[in-house]
Length: 108
Image 1 (cartoon, rainbow, N blue to C red):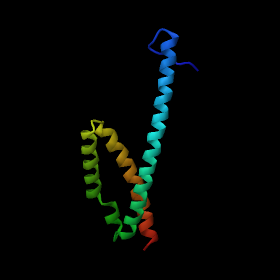
Image 2: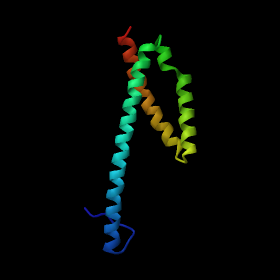
Image 3: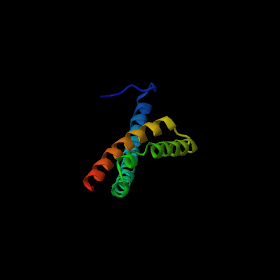
Image 4: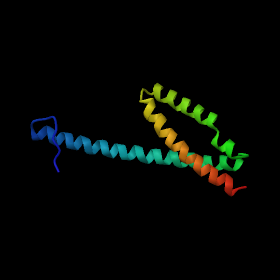
């Protein structure tokens, strides 16, 4: 299906399609890198889950907020939207807390 572009001629429309294809390839590469980093983070979380004393230490709301502050500041330094970074991290942290609670329960 052809998508309309801001360009009136077919040459520019084709160039837009080619550029979009290249952008999609680059996004896929970035996604692979992100997944690799999430895997590394998960391995560390699994270790942390075995080291904590109780569920409260796993949930650690103060630590969560420090992480959020840290990643928001990092986003601002890189001039990207800190709200997107925060939302992404809150979702990720929530799932990692669930995993860590399970690991903690299984080890005790």
